[in-house]
Amino acid sequence: MAPYDSESSGGEEEEEYTETNVLLGYASKDAEEDTISRLGGRPEWLDPDAPPSGALARCKICKELMVLLLQLNGELPDRFPGHERRLYVFSCRRKNCRRRDGNIRVLRGVRVAPGSKTVTEKKVEKEEEKDKVAKEELEPPTNLGETLFGAKTLGSSKSANPFSTSASTSSNPFASSSNPFSSPPPIEAKSKPAETHSKESTQESIKDLPKTFAETLSLNNFQPTSGPLPPPEPWPAEKEFPAAYPISYLTDADYETLEPTPPPVSQATARMDIDDPATASGGKEDREVFESSMDFDFQKFADRLAQNPEQVIRYEYGGQPLLYSKTDAVGKLFGLGGRVIPRCGNCGAGRTFEVQLTPNAIAELEAEDMSLDGMDWGTVIVGVCESDCQARAVDEGKAGYLEEWVGVQWEDLTSTR
Image 1 (cartoon, rainbow, N blue to C red):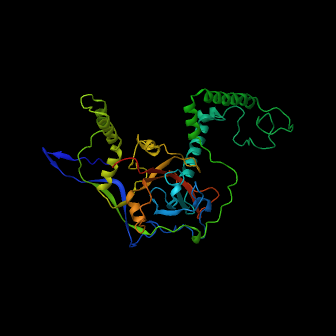
Image 2 (image 1 turned 135 degrees about the horizontal axis):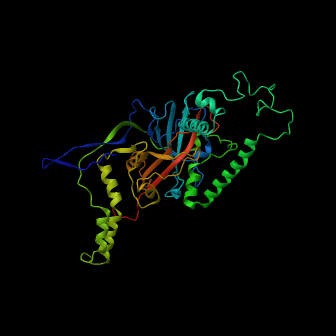
Image 3 (image 1 turned 120 degrees about the vertical axis):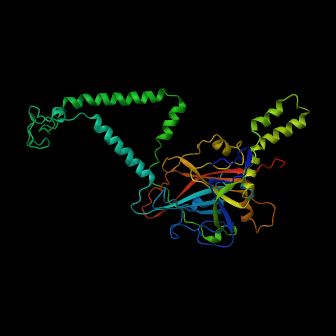
């Protein structure tokens, strides 16, 4: 993401607005060309006759049906050609389920056009080709003299067929013998114990590795679970769902533009004031300074949103989300710039950030709700499979749905902002 601090030239500060890689979405009640991407309403599936399993429609806490927060047209033709894809963010409306893991869920719908191989399949084919080439390079040629010098070695014949059943065992050591119980060739007999010994040595080496390395190997060699999938539940009828939020279409999308702002005071500097005897004047003051330092990340979050206050979503596939806090469980996953969110449970590939909802989305969704007891999250962060894999047992040209990772950062109710 591009820096947005002000720059000076010739001793005089010039205001230069900076465009970042984040695409901002804005809501409108009037639909334009794209009617797929929107807040609220009911989901529109890739194939209306083949919705996802009804089990994905329920809150993980109370098992009641959820309502749609966001439906997003997620097609990325340059990255995933032939993939028709959408994202759906659902939320439980029950108050008792708020601020608990599982009351917000995300689905990724994908339909792969016939002949369009997924990224995962391409990677597998590429790895298989590498293994094949490596194996061929390691195997010694069957006729080294001819390979190196173009000369025929003793006993060789251009017309000889090593796989002919009429060839004698003396001229063809690999030809099938009339004795089915005859011993295998000496070379092959020697290779098998060596291969077994090699496998055993590798397994012992892995056992000797520290646990963290062994866990890393296990993660990097993830194999999707096999066996039959559970039968899908019918998607519930519309009348069974709670009242839907009003529809707001995401009609405008612009890259984020930031005006020059003074560099913020570092969090480390703010914390230093707590331990400075020269500035310490009492417990209350110390506590206020500490709370101020804890609010540093939120203030940065709020200041960034304030430059484009009408935004309801922030989109940057493969980027970094704007964190509401770096001290909660979600913030710690992204706080150091790493991408350590859980891997895809379907194919084992890594996941990456794609989109997040901002607090202004709550204002749009609850515009017709006059109560003061509404949603209280700070941001909803969505992470998706980097390979955009398809659900198992779903054929090409058919729509499939998978649950993706969602990280919810809740509003800090204890802070006096």
